[in-house]
Length: 594
Image 1 (cartoon, one colour):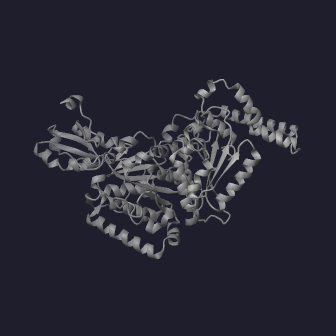
Image 2: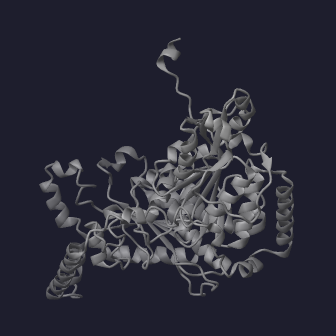
Image 3: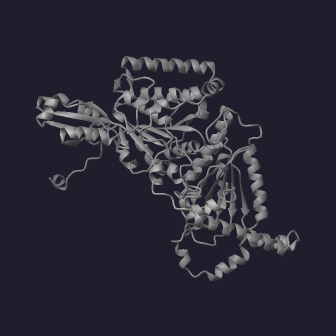
């Protein structure tokens, strides 16, 4: 696929060798071939995860046309030409096509009229399992019928028929909308080197396959026999191909291995200490807003923003409204900012996406089906193609549905060797909500689930000021960020906001400092907490002081990267540490017996 897309053979081979001259500087390896100049976007390791990414890529084409923007490496205020015939193409096997992501993708492609072609490579196997042993219907090209998405099935051993079918479906996608092409073929090798298929005695089967199922042999025999080519001409082509292969291997052999410093270099697109107040907005913001937001819409959203800013100055704004204010300001500042959420038109549960679709239209503010993995995946596809998506999760624990997509968002900058930024912001209310009556699945510490994913910046906010400033910074960051807000404090906690100010994504906040007297008397303790723990800790400070103690109370606004410096500075004073962790309680065995 990479070769067919025009990716340099030497760079492909070097990536397979994990060399610095590879398409991804050796950071991707065989599972992650990416090439930005040819728009070759993976290489994804988790079965079926690529489907919503392709939806997002297709959506970015429509965004370009709707907003009048173009450019793969930074948008410019130039509308795509009338001859813009770009489409998004995604490959999947017939085994992976049984995944629910396929139905979601077909639904989204049909609903939005996406220029998306799904190519199903049907080799009869789902890893080692015969697909028909686990799938009721292997005619994947018919899956789109429910959504009005047409499909074709073609014999993959006949190159000329595949070419004709490919031209037909591509023409349909360019002029009418999504389509499915199923290519029935034979798999000569196992799924991976660990595949037990390599251990079996299959000599007779493989001899039969080489004689009757090899598309190259079919092609050669047909066109030599009808006089289109001579055998000598085909032999010359093989020699030319062999020269190219040897050159690619030589290039890979001679390429150096990446320096060990590359790992740190690829940790985040933007350094942890970035000052987001200094980020320059696109010059085309006002022009795009003027041609895409009607005067009536502009009047409504301007009044809404003015009202929220007044509340922020009066100390009456909630966490949910503070995030909503930040989102509107950033979507007005940079029209490449988009947002995805379920229940978006109604403002979701805490008004975070309120008035976004009513202002920016469905193209930029998408109300989504109830599957977080699907619309996180669509956001990833937009992020790889010049847009800056926001994902609102309503409750962050629902992100469990999107673990594969969140993981890939975190890894993309690194596995592509820094070629693709991933400016995605995930926001939601979460936490364990102590002493509150939320369901178990709404009250888990989802932050603990995602802490181990490389490449994510993870923050918390227990006040409107923190929520506002961190949201603005995350939207401007060129990497994936995740903001957790306290689910039971979204409308309860109110305060002032330092308007128009971005906050750092790598620092905590000292909310209360122990007195020098308490420190001198060895009666001071450093307390680390976040989310609902902030409220709990603040509520008992007076009681602690009445007992002759005091605390340095540090809100862990930055969970990753962790603000070690602020913690160390406090510990230099107190030499004692208490952590009020928002997590699932674990009882000691003895206590459980008692």
